[in-house]
Length: 259
Image (cartoon, rainbow, N blue to C red; front, side, top):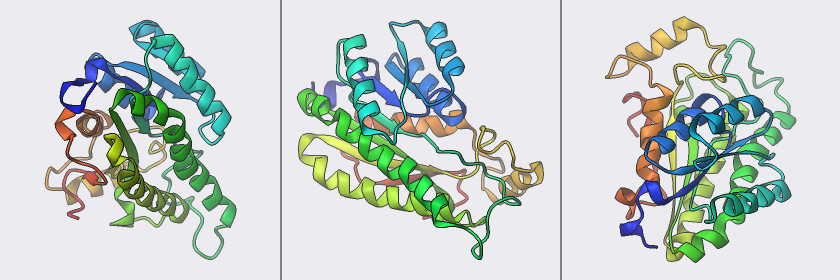
């Protein structure tokens, strides 16, 4: 297998947190391109099994694992390889640990505790490290690999200071770039796709409608990005069309953030 002859339809894709919200949109985007998808979930078993039933077991494997636990991730990846008789060659690190975008309820700088930072770092950074380490052997064997990390435009435009979430995603961008350098010789690319507030996911369900309207008015497109639109950019980084792109962060927010 090589980068110029590996369409999405030939890939086994792992989407962490892939059963609901943005993750479900990403899973469906890959399935729409003919890929086989490992829909990872932590607690959303019913949603994951519904996707598996909708598309069939030949296309979807619903797989429970806590991404912060390396043993669980390794077991999930091994199960996926046995199920599809092929290694995972695309990883989308989307799982979000216990977070809601509710600016009114967020802890402010004078009272936020380190434990909230630790929780987000565990999910974003440790989770991504676990999935990369678990899939690296299969990607090297294939001579092809794609890692797409899900970020945020909040570290460029912290319109709402979600300290813990934003710091963890900034760290994930750093990991994205160092992994890109380390894994490039293996023909494995590592990139990030960063969004703003999406209309609407489970995490953004607590956001007041007025906030969505304010964001929409601030974008050149005059609307808030949808999960399906965001997922399109993830497909690009997983495809052969991005074979010379690595270590990059693409902001997909309707043009709100310019750099």
